[in-house]
Image (cartoon, rainbow, N blue to C red):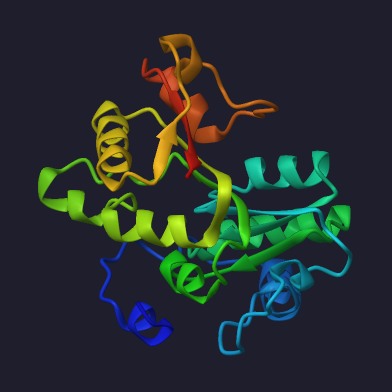
Length: 233
């Protein structure tokens, strides 16, 4: 498939509302000044080496789709300063929260995209990403909305294209139907090998996992989470 075909391929809306309560003045200022400095310019051709998006030589590039409150993305950026992180989040208030932490801590290994993740995936070069994290995505629980779940054959093909051979796709959720959905779709795709060998593997959080507010909410409501790791063949 050509680049033009990928860009024009129809997609569903994978996210809901774009904005919550009004931003405070400082948040508005960051959105007007800091966001443009960190935002990836999809209007320009993707660089041959995606690592050049960062102001220093990073060893790896990791993509998180739908970073929510940003606690996981920030934790990984702090603890892996040699890795470049790309965070995708269309919800304005969540982006504003992330920018506040980036500014306060001077994190220089984070770049962002504030719109549909499929736009970024179609822009990225082949084999440019070491790991993709999709953590507690919207489960779209009603069956009629399942087509809006981000895990699909179309998006798995996008993942497969941009991930390096041996790269990882990590998925976390507390919704059993979405976990089963993801396992079935990855199996059907054929380009992703699930690494679990027993139940403890997928009930154990990822290495260095900081926890998220979504995970905490699931625990309070009595739901167990699962953590699936797939290797791109």
